[in-house]
Image 1 (cartoon, rainbow, N blue to C red):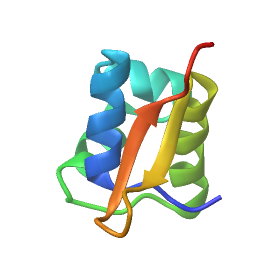
Image 2: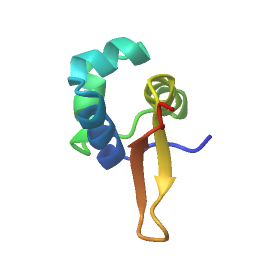
Image 3: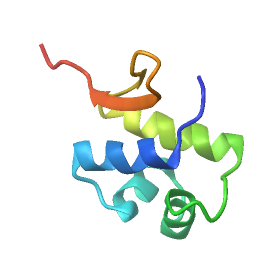
Image 4: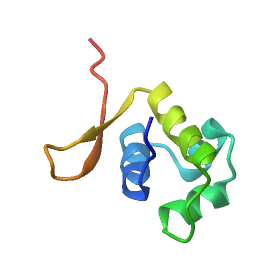
Length: 79
C-alpha cells in the first residue's frame, strides 16, 4: 500500500462529503494533523498516512494512477 497525497485526501473527502474532523475520527488522527497535511505544512508518519488511506478505502475510495497523468481517486462501483 502506497501513501496518499494531500490532493488525494482533499478529493477523497469531497467524494465522501467528509469534513477534516470526520476523516480524523475515521483514521484515529487529530483534525490538526489532517489540516496540516492537506495544507502541505507537514507530512504525517508512514503509519498515519496508512491510517488515512485505510479510512478512505474502508468507505469505497480507490486510489488510482490516471494513465500517467498523476494520482487520483474515485469511488468503487457499488454494483
